[in-house]
Image (cartoon, rainbow, N blue to C red; front, side):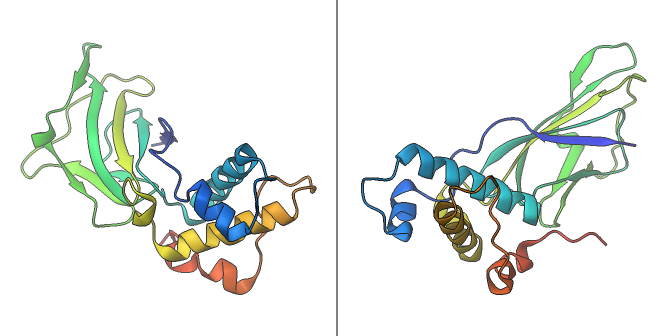
Length: 190
C-alpha cells in the first residue's frame, strides 16, 4: 500500500532569524535581506531532507488508498493530528471522530492506530480514499529546534554565502564534524 506524505503548507517560521544569521555572517547592511532569507530557507530544507525531520510546526498531509493497520507519520516530531478523513463505501467524504484513533507521537516516526477496541472503517475502492492531516515540528519558536541542528544550518548558510557565485543551490557542508551535528537527529530505517 502506497503512502503519499507531502507538506500541506509552509512552516510557522524559519528556525533562524535574519538578525542571528547576519550576526553569524558578520555582515553589514550591504548584504540583501532577501538573499539571506533565501539562504535560511535553503539551509532548513536541506537539514529537513538530510534528517527526515521537520524543524518548526508545519502542516503535513498523508494520503492512502485505504486504511493500513497503522499509519506511519513521517517527518517527526509529530505535534498533533488535525483530522482523519475517508471516502466511505457509498462515496461520501467522512471525518473520523478523534476518539476512534490514537496518536503515538513518542515513537519516531509517529504512528496513528485505531483506538483500543476500534477498527478502521471500510473505504471506497478508489485512489486517495484516506487523508490524514497532521502537524510536525519541534514547536513554533526557533529556540524549540535543537541547538546542533540550528548550528548546522548556520554553518551551511555561511558556506552558501561564501560560495554564492557557485551554481549549486544546496549547501555543500561536507566536513565530518559539521555533518556529525546532524547524526543524532537522522531518521534511520530498521
